Length: 177
Image (cartoon, rainbow, N blue to C red):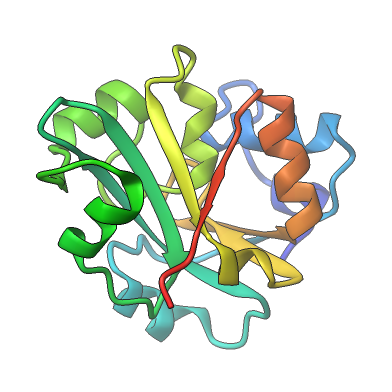
């Protein structure tokens, strides 16, 4: 676990990578956060094995589309089972399916394995509806990938909500219980 300053040591800041977009946003908001470096993680199972002890809520993020080609980002607790038919009812839509990797990149600017609410920073046209699990918002600390799956940011839930406000993104709370 490193602070931003510790993370920068030995990095080439002349050619910043995609995650710096998130770091810069959080720094402008004066958010406290920590950066965890780890091997690239593609699944929740990979994350559980790799992370060791890391406090807070850990998420599962699904990029979905419906029959009308509407896009959804669903963020839940990592252990939450998702029934797409039940989710369709909660969202008031039908025929949900997973968005393709190309569609994911087109709308959120990330590749599979790197999806998180931070990717909403790339949705300038607001074409992705964001839903987050109410139970996850009850956590004091949240952990998300910053546009790349070899890093995780830990930050306070209130700072995450400030980040969303700064990019003018509303969210819808959904309950899976």
